[in-house]
Image 1 (cartoon, each protein chain N blue to C red):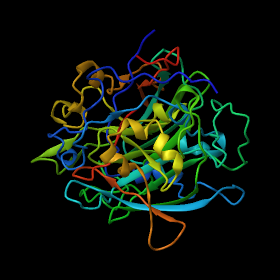
Image 2 (cartoon, each protein chain N blue to C red):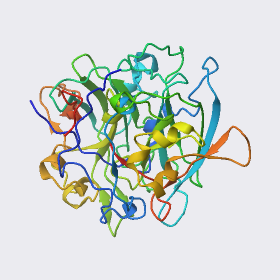
Image 3 (cartoon, rainbow over the protein chains, first blue to last red):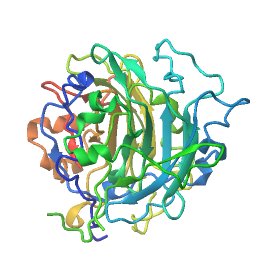
Length: 234
Length: 189
């Protein structure tokens, strides 16, 4: 079969370096040798595809996974998944996880002295629709302390995991909230050199998706690597 | 319109909550043909300590060298039930394990076949972006002519090739070493 076009590499500064000493865990886990440049082959332009058979329909509403309603402020998080060419990425799986309103994860490693919520698990998933749109209902996650440095606190955030159409488009990221006073101090949020790229991780308050008498809306658009037009990478 | 891909962020320590649902440690169900292998190993940090909060994702072709994906237009079949996707976490001591079939050779650049391989994404707390690497199979004559292996300096190629275990014939061992003299080769990909 003919060579297939590969996917674009990141613009300089728009993705984090592996070693980012302010994020202390990166010091012993970042590779020390330079990466080996690998042109994309069939192995990288293909990747796992998931259809609605893997879906639990209730999974896009994190406030309705238990008998009662979770505590905290109900919010709607929605947006579009696009590629770098501006085209929507349809039918792609989004997995999401987060802390509860008190800033506690339902995870045995999380020993933060804040209450668990019996009505909140903090995980969801959905597929984008044919226009790349997705929508979750959840509660606003709390900020929480961590041990990276003295008096370290993570800003409120939601973890997003996306596959896209290929192995090359896989992305795991975090969504933040506008106006969070902790953002300037967070080594994870600040790991990326390019300020505009960092700011794109901050969701936008959105009247259009805000539901009267019900929940505020936040918009978070996600961009996956785009494809070259021809098989020849420069 | 030209956009820039969203910045990657770490999976953090609590990814189990969101990602456990699609853990798959057997990539080849009962109806899938091919040579069955089990691959086990450890993820090791700069001190040689096992990483207890890492996750590997795997992607591979079937035994005929065909991916379960529409971009693979080779006139070969994919058995129903074969996806070629795996996702496994590490245990407390940094070990992971999965079962699969040895993939066939898939096309590479300029029409040359690649040696059988599994592509791997590595995620963990402390990694701000995934690491990308490959697992090749021991004693495969195609390894010497594989274009990706040949991009790697000779002395480091071995980090991409699984070893036969002394425990069992169908067991292979392959580690992810994050730093040090035996550091695994990771790809800019």
